Length: 98
Picture (cartoon, rainbow, N blue to C red):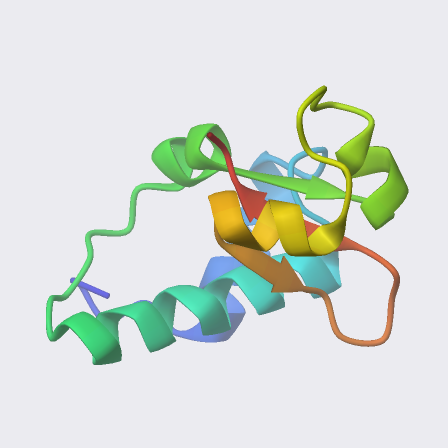
């Protein structure tokens, strides 16, 4: 990320300033996803935590996420419509809002 934000700085910022948006493990998963996205696109991102909070949402379970959408019935449907980031070691997922 522009300004060379390290994982610990990214996670620390969210835990201090926006703990209700992403869990500790969720913020790690989001950071890793965004780094991979930078690598795949070849474009460096700016660290804009408020934009990340608007663009991505973490749900404790897939079921909780699916309840938010009338036309999405399965994780496969969800993946067909948006990016899904699994939070390692939990049942949680992060999706790119659509």
